[in-house]
Length: 108
Image (cartoon, rainbow, N blue to C red; front, side, top):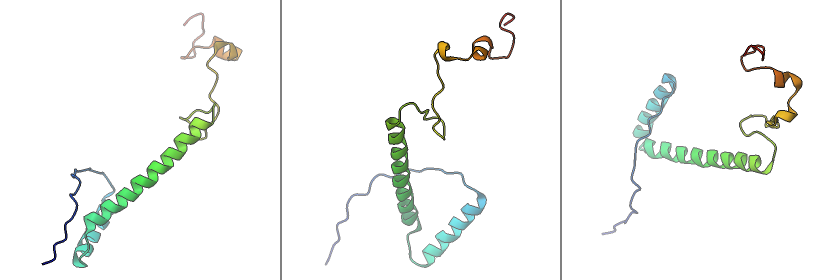
């Protein structure tokens, strides 16, 4: 008798995801079709999610690396515009005399 010893499967957990109802219906239909064809829908879906996670990690790593190697850019801005000066000496006269709520400085 031939016995295939399989490696221990990693512990599993659930990840709940909100999605459009139309996409959920499509996935349910695909799950039924996969079952009819003898395919493992869940394993296939998990494999695709793993590929997605790997690709997204790579993209984030690239973006983080480019932010670290280009000084003077603000990583919070999509276009990476230079960070505005924070030193009060570098502010324009308008910025030095105005208040956050737009009131006159004498009355604020």
